[in-house]
Structures are given as structure tokens and as C-alpha cells.
Length: 121
Image 1 (cartoon, rainbow, N blue to C red):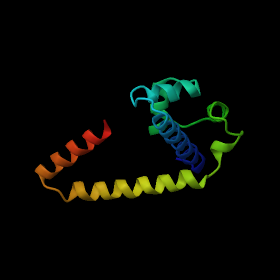
Image 2 (image 1 turned 30 degrees about the horizontal axis):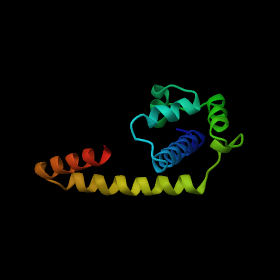
Image 3 (image 1 turned 90 degrees about the horizontal axis):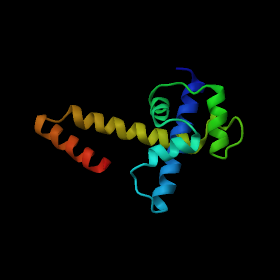
């Protein structure tokens, strides 16, 4: 994956987190926020999911995202400290989770999985 594709994805994930935090802080229920963010970007929830995982963000879509999130043209293409810092924290968490999983016995793995699912709701 190119550096530009990674930068755009990282920035989109940052915008998504920012949107979610703002909505939750405003009292919105968590259910439906993914769809609301997709609607703000004027894309389908399915496309948003694909973009967050692997689909590249082309130039036209990048400009569309910027327009609908109030960012200047080209914003998605640039590294932003807050997005990179969040990405580093996420990577550190994933590394710790991977280490815990790999060093756990079957019972501990079931407990880890149960706890993570409970926290995700």
C-alpha cells in the first residue's frame, strides 16, 4: 500500500473517531453512528467499512470526504500529528493484546474474548 493510501486511511479513521466522540459526548446513542458518519460523507455504510479496512481512497472520494467534514482540499493527503499519535496508540494496544492472547491458555483466551466483546457494546 502506498504512503498516500495509508495517510488517507489514517486520516479518515481519525475523522471517524472524532465524529463518534463528538456525537457520544452530545448524548447520541452509539447505535447508528457508523451509518450517520457514512451519510455525512454521502457514501454507503458498506463503502465506509471497506475504506476503513482495505479499499483505497481515490482523489475524488478524498475531496468529497474533505468537503463533507469541513476540511480544506488536500487535508486528507497530509500527515496530521493527532491522527498519527492515535494510530501509534492503537498499534501499541494491538501489540499488547496480541501478546496477551499468544501467552494465554484456552480458558484465559475465552475470558479475554468475552471481556473485549462486552466492552465493544
